[in-house]
Every structure is written in C-alpha cells, then in structure tokens.
Image (cartoon, rainbow, N blue to C red; front, side, top):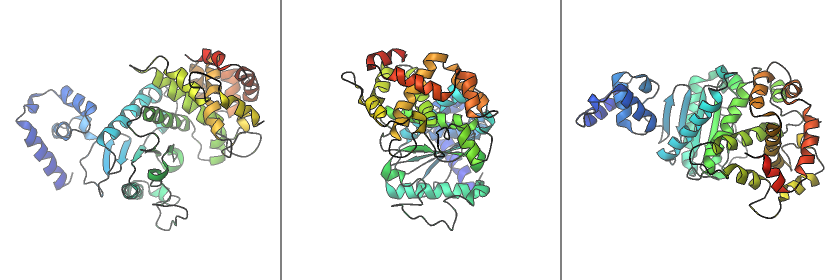
Length: 379
C-alpha cells in the first residue's frame, strides 16, 4: 500500500474516531461497507482493522476523474460524470444476479469471474478517459489479451466519433453489452451506458440483469474455439452460417424480467406489462409485433442480426416464456449445465423434449392467438 493511500486512510480514520466508530463491532462495520460502499469512513475503518470486507477494495488516485472500485472478482470503472448512486444501484442488481444465478447454479462458476464493469455517462471526454483507464488495466493485468484488443498501441480506429470504438462511443449511442469472454480474454467486460435508459429509470435494473444473464450463459462454455462456442450458446442454430439472437437474447431478456418481477415491492402486473410491451401491446388494442413477425416469413431461429434482428429481442423472450410454461424454469438451468458437454440440439432435446425447430413450429401456433390468451402463461 503506497504512502498516499496510507495517509488517506489514516486521515479518514482520525476524522471519524471522535464519533465512536472505534467501538462499533466488526459485523456492524462490514454491514455498513456493504450497504454504503460509497462512504469512505466505513471502508477506511474496515481496512484499518484488516477486515475481509475491506481487503478487496482500494483507495486509488483516480485517473483523470475515473472512479474505481475493486471487490473480489469484480472491478468497477465508472466515468467521472457517473454518480455514486448509479454505481451503487448497478452493483446492487449485479449482486441480485449473482445470488440467484451465479451462486444458485454452480455449473460453470469457475468461469464467471473476473468481471470488469464499466459504466459510461453522457460526457464524451469523460468516456474517453474511462476507455483509457480500461486500456491501462488490460495492459497491466491482461497482457495476453492486449495483442487482439482495441487497446493495443497499433490499433487504428476508423469509424468512431470518439475513442477507440471500444466503450467511449456508448456515451453517444447508449446501450449495454457483454463485450468479452472470460475464456478468450481472461475477463468478462460488462458495459453499461447512462443513456436509454438512464440509471434513474427502473429499466436500468432489468438491463443489468439481462447482461448478467449473458455472463451466466457464456460461463457455461469452456471451449476457446469461437465457432464451437457460438454453436453451443445457440447463435449458430439457423439454417445458414450467420449468428442469430433468438435463444441467447430471448433467454437473457425473459429470465432478467422474470427475476426482477420477483423482487420486493415490484408490481404483480410488472411481468405481464413488460411482455405485452415487447409485442407492442400496452393494455388495450392488438399486439402488432406478432403480425410483423409472421409477415417476415422467416422462422425465429433463422432471423439473424440484420434487418429483422429486433424479433430476437421481442419474440425471442416470448418463445422462452412459452418453453418455461411447458417444462418449467428449472430446465433452463439444467440445459445450461449440460450444453458444454454436448451440442445445442442434443441438450435442447434432453431438457425440453423435442428439437427446437419443432418447438418453434408449435410456438407459432400458440403465438397466432389474441394477446389476452398469450398473457395467461405469464406468471
């Protein structure tokens, strides 16, 4: 620990000692560190006592305002214009995912960390500084990844308004993603942007869960061969050689919404409302997305990331909801526990009872009904 860090901790410790914090129990200190991770005094006390809850976190000189937190296998890097509250709520919902998926279903657990969580705001300059901080981390801790990373010295971005076409452009475009694989890069890179939705919006929480489920999915696969990896996670299930989103995005969206719907103080109508929204139904009228999907004349598993990709994100979750209504939610997790040891189709038949093409045929018959009948399968 550097002199500056030690001095900072000492200063913080002295500043709170008069308040009687030294008499508080270790359990109380760790609880406060967990509940209020942005309060430096509690963290300083934990570090001063050598408590486990303080051992994985550091006081660091921020790089040009970039905020950094480290705890266990998670590193958080947030742009200077990202609030402490946004960091806190993102970490909170990542913990919900960890508890309900990462810890509850141990298959692949050795491949779920480390995670680098980057949170981009709206300021382009701050986003570039965040991107530079990420690249410094990769250069220091992930040298093997650097040679094929956009952080390498000889990388020449071509179509970026800002930065390296890595994370800085999220300040302009918004969005969220898992942009690296632990098997190939040594870490999962989770990118959250403060646009569409902003952290203050309830949808931010479900986006965190959606992206966390992608980590759960990807951690099940042990191969470093990209083509084999894409086949096992279900992105090569079309009758062509292009990637398709129906399964990977459909499961992430539905499982994220389902988990959020079970949290305290969430409306009992939340899941039905959100699933209706996906089909363009907002409590009255028709569900136009269904007609639009059928008008493509393309099977769900053949829709790639081109013109009609949105159906992977809107109709895909409905397929998963239908599947869960037929075989139960546990079979989704049992499927993922087995998919690494067998191909996608065999695991699908084993846990869902028939080939996915047959299931999509059956699902389309179900989907071609009034929305009020569809909503009956949503818990």
